[in-house]
Image (cartoon, rainbow, N blue to C red; front, side):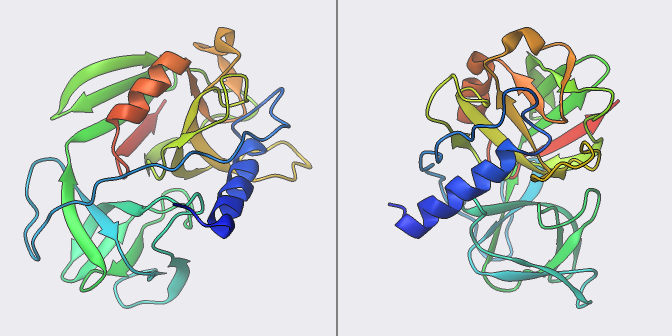
Length: 249
């Protein structure tokens, strides 16, 4: 069960997300703190990465993100995210004991390196997401095969959705479908660099539901990807933490 401090941290983090590039019109009110999520721990023996798909790391101890293996410090990587979820990160490169990972503590496109000798368990994910901004379409793949197609809203011309490789960091539920995020949210490692002038909120990207489902299929958000509540509930059930998300034009 979460402590009061953890619940408060989650509420603050979700409030920051609410005023980021996600919400657009009507997003001034933050959703309630997300319900706790249960995430199964990967059962990997030391030195063995079973299964198929992309390498993923379950981080069980606080780490330091470095610019290169053994290099300068970029940021801290706590073993829980700002929403209180287990820290599960996509591994995009490996050099000996060092793991190059994606994390929201970094800039878009930046890889941080963590020491993988202790406090890390490696496993594989056979899911991936691909977003075509021009087609307003999210493809869900498992084992390399497309298993689902989800229509989405994307960033408006003045605040386009950033392209690149990101990863899912959390699986969050809200207090109700009338929240700016509908039922649920998949926060990503990415950030929105094209915020409106004078914007005082955060910049975190996400895939989320919306009460304004008429916006789906259009360039309507401040950067995040919007889907129907039905689609988002399915994605929350299926998509593991650490799943890679490739966004392109």
